[in-house]
Length: 442
Image: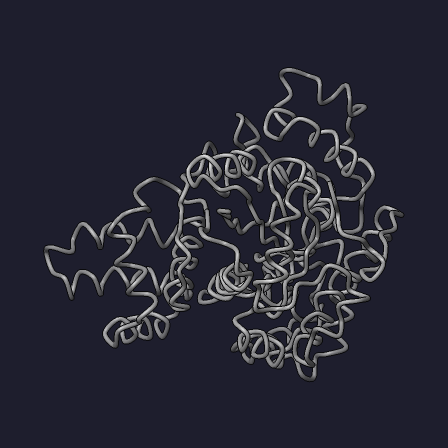
C-alpha cells in the first residue's frame, strides 16, 4: 500500500486542487491520498471562507481518500511552524510514503533547491550573521531571509554559486516555493524517510485576482464570493447570484469554469446565503478580545511585545479586523504576521500554547474529519501504526490524550465553536457541536 500526503487549506477548493490530487496519484502511483487540512482558521491569519466540514466534503468528493485536521496552533503559525506541524502529522501517521506539494515552476525541483533547503535547515554561522544584520536594518523576516540566503551563497560558493544564488530570490519570494522549501526543511530536520514530490502550479499566480481560465487562484475566487461584504464589515449582503443551476450552466461563466462541476453551485449557494466568511465578520469579537486582554497582549504570539504596545496605543482607531491589521503593519512586520497575531488574540492562543505545540512538533494528535469507505484499510493502518492518537469520535477518544494534548485539542475545538457562532450570526445556519459532529463518510 503506497500513500501520498497533501498539505492544503482548500480555501476554497478549485480546479487547481483537483489537478494536484490527480497528478499526485499519477506521479507517485499512490493507492491512497491523505490530506492534512487547516481547520476553520488558515495560515494567513484569517477565518476560512467556508467551514472545515464543507471544505473536507469538497476534497473527499473530488479525489481525497481521507482528510485530517491540522490543529489550530499549527494552522496559525508561521510558514515554518505550519510546515513542521503538517509534515510531522503526516510522518507520525505511520502510513505516508511521499508528500506532494505545489511549486511555482519545475526549476524548484532541482539541485539548487536542495542546497537552499540544507542552508535554511542547518543555518551556518555566516548565514545567521547575515540574517540578523538584515533584520536589524528593518527588513521583514521573509525579505531578510531571502537576502541573507542569496548573499551567503554568493560569498561562500563564489562564482560557481552565482547560478544557485540567482535562483534564491525566486524560490524564497513566491508562496508555493516558500512552503515547498519549508516542507523539505521539516523533513530534513525530522530525519524523516518521507520523500517530496513537487508539482508545478497551473494557470494563475498565487495572488492573481483575475477570475479567468480553468485554473484561477483561490484569492480570485474568494474576492469574487466576498466582493460586496469584504469592503463593508457591517454588511453581509454578498454578490447577488442567479439561481445556481442557471448560473453554473452558463458556458461563458468564468466562475463556473474554474471550479469542479458541482462545487460552483455549492459556493454560490453559500455566498447567496451569507455562509462565506471573512475577517471583518469577526471584527466586533476581535475588538472585544483586544479590550479584554489589552493589559497582557504581549502574551500572544512570538516576539509580540512591540506589537502589543502599538495595539494598545492604536486601539481607539479600531474599525475592522483588516483596517486595524493594516494600521498595525510596519516596515519589518508583514500584514500576514500581524493578522495571525490578531487571530491568536481572538482565539486565546498564548505564547505558552505555541511553545506547547512546538514541543510535540505541532502534531499532538490526528483528528479525522472524514474518509471514503474504500479507504477503510488506510484508516485501520493509521490506527495501528501511528505514534499519536487518532481521533475519530471525540466523545470516546478523550482518554487517549494527556494534559498537553487536551489543551491543544480544546483550542482547536474552541476556534471552531467561535467560527460557528459567527456563521450563525451571519447566515442563521447552525452546525453541530464538535462533540456531536460525526466524521464524513462516503
